[in-house]
Image: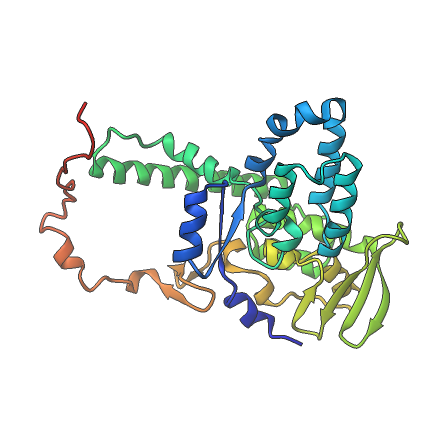
Length: 330
C-alpha cells in the first residue's frame, strides 16, 4: 500500500483560472509543478452563444445531459457516455464540442480528483476575496494607508469569527451524533470544514460493505444495487478511496468514514485533518504560523535578519518612488 502522506506532500500546486491562452502557455513553461485547471463557469457561460442556434428547443435538455456528464466520478464512464450524449444531439463534429473534449483534462472533475483544489471548480472564491478587499482599499490610497486598511480588513474578519464562535456557544453543540469521530472533527476543524465533514459523516451510514478482503473494502449505496461501487483501502492507519474526495477536498469521504464505522475506528489520524482546515492553534500563548505540512514555527521567534536594514529609525514605511508610465500620457 502506498504511503499516502508522502504522496500528498509531493502533489503539485493548483491554479484555477479562465481559458486564457497566454496564461496557459506561461503556466506550461514556467510553472512545471502546477496543475492548471479551467473554471467550469467560464466554460458554460459560452454555451448559449455556441449552441442555442444549433439546438433550439433541445438546448435545455443538452445542458442537463452535459451537467450529468460533468458529475461522473469515473473517467471510463465519462468516455463512454460522452460519445453517446453528443451523438444523441448530432454534436460529435461540432468544433466547440470537439474543442471541449480535447481539453477535458483541464475541466472534467474525474480527471482532476487526484489533485487538491479545496473542492473548488470555479473562481468564485477568489472573486469574492477581491470583492471583500475592495471594501477597504482603492487605487487612490498610498502604501501607508494600504497597510492600515489591510489591518482593518483583518480586524473585521477576526470580529466575524469571534461572533460566529459566540453564537455557536450560545446555541449549543451542533453535533448530530455522540460519535467520538464527530466530536474530534468538531474540536479540530473550522466551522466551514466541519460542516462539509458532517455532511459526509451523516451519509456514511447509507453505504454497506459488500466485500472485505484484508485492507480492501468494496462499498455500495444501500438502496441502489446497480449504483457505482467504491473501493476503500485501509490498513488501520493509512486509507484511500477510489472516489478521491480527500485528495480533491481535503476532507474524508463518506465511503472511508463508513469503513471506519464498520471496523469500530473511533479516531482520525492527524494526517487526514489537514492544517488548512483546522482551527487556530496556540502553544504557550504564542501564535503559530503554518509554513508547510511539516513545520510549525513560533511567530515570536520569526525575525528577518535584514529587518533593521529595511526599516528606518522611526519605523515609517515610505511610499515607493514614482515611475514614468509606458504609453501615451493622459
